[in-house]
View 1: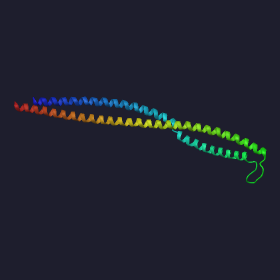
View 2: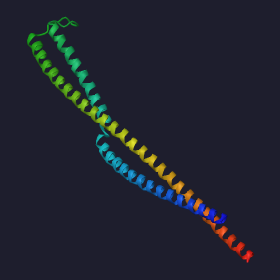
View 3: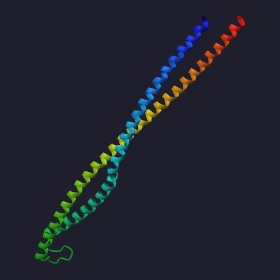
View 4: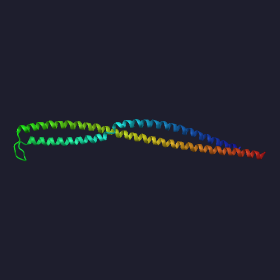
Length: 193
């Protein structure tokens, strides 16, 4: 009676552990599917991010061009102001010929206007590239988040596999003990007879 009770408890324990193994397997399958989905999303974002990788370098180049243009623009404005204010050279005190002065002012106004247009275009290009750069950093952050989620799921799979292995080992131990009891029970029966 007692031996049968012990065997029944062992069999019930094995059954409980087998059910836990089934749950572990289901969780592992679920995690694996989630990982596949995350990897697909990560790959898609990695492909998308490639179109934005040059943004930072482009912004640097555009800023360099803008600085050069601003310098030329400022030089032209200074020169234009000089010819607008002066009819006599302040250094050598010679008169500046009026037609030369008027032509120079007109020419400088055209140059200044072109510089203003170019600066406006560069500002627009910089704004566009800065938006692309923000998109790059946003995608980079999203990729990192997806990779972290993938790592967490891999840890869960690893833990689930470890639990499964431990449960299988416990089942084997219980099975071995039950077999030993059966052998001992047979021996006891032989001694009774």
